[in-house]
Length: 579
View 1 (cartoon, helix red, strand yellow):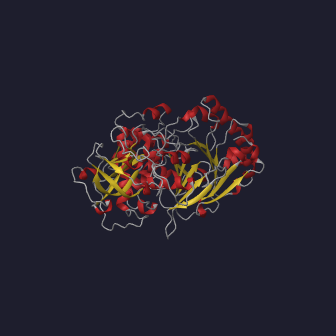
View 2 (view 1 turned 90 degrees about the vertical axis):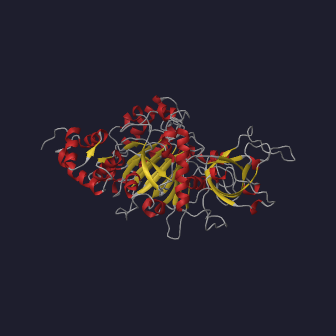
View 3 (view 1 turned 180 degrees about the vertical axis):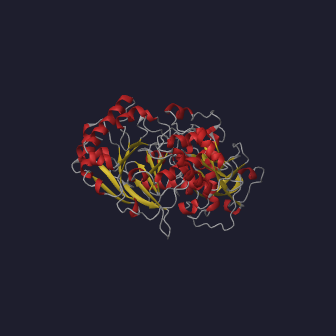
């Protein structure tokens, strides 16, 4: 059989005969996959047939459709370990697991539909460098920050248009309609003594802190500025100051820069304000949570199929298992000893499973070092630990998710994977470097991993309001992530890759690499789990905090096929390990 290399010219010719055309990156992507395959041209007809079955809108096939089709068709031909996992990162790249080049999801409010947009920061099959991601946070770069906030607003608008306004509050506006801020400019404010008696408006916008030098809040009898006048609301066109009463500042925790939904009346502003009117807030909330199946149903099939996995099929294997380990310092002998003990415990079990276990290891991997040499050493130590358990090494799969403390991956979110120099020691193994955050299609289930031990305290410190509810700080943080549709509004985010931080639609499971923060204010070492957004039909998002392996060997075993059941365990005698 012929094994001659396939050329882009050959691919273009075959597609033209079928009435389709390709871009140069699309033809290159196909050639890269088929290099080394016997009779590669015979592999093109099923690919062309699959693409035609999707009924593309034009004759020229976009790169995203090519990549998704290749990934789907090659999945059944790979071995069990490879077919169980498809990695999706925020960057335009391909991995050793799948062609997971991603595009960002955009919502067009005028057409009330979704579309795809290529990531602005990279080109096909290339992970951007750390410096490139960091540079894109500069506000002057292609006006990317205003675009980032506008995209966040439009995705929130999509959820509001599909969900019920204020469905978690006693107020039920059966005929509520959103009012753009621009429509209120020039409207005479109500002078009624009772602010609730004026005409009510429903506004969607970003909550920001007011510049006191422009709009100085009135003074209280104590001489302090009144915090009720400390906030404004922005939409893509206009801005208005808010009067946010103290009674609402304890309703829920809302971080600054979150897109919020308010019910308000228009009132006169204090004399020192630049605007003649302000919005007196009567109700405030984050956009309503829309369950994943309901939100997926609003996305056109041709878009949904490219970006998101289908609903979970009935699993054939009943022993699916993910092991979640946070903060394994591979340069620390005590941590390495704990990790080696964990591997030896699972080594006899892994080969007997029909579905190979997936170890998700969340950084930091080298005690927060800034030296690449330390990461080379760390991965060499990981290689040695895996080589000591050859049966587990060959049957399991390992996913490495960096943390903000892994300086070689930068500290701007989202983080690129570990550099190739560090990964050389793991060549040939089932070890895959992932970005932070990353979404994983694990046998039809959408799992989102975000590694940040500071996410919970940073969220509480940045919140404009404080909750008096029954949720713990960790549960409150999860709820805010899902309600705001964004993983971390407190982090420094690259505008060009902000779509990688979006939770739209919500995943089946959200895994946060973090210690648990109990309600009484302490910080626990172990992990925790709760389900948010469940309905009478079940569902909801399983939210898991991993705990801290580097302390006493705490880890989580996650069983996706058993309704995301978690077992929180620790290695016996692990308390002596270094934090």
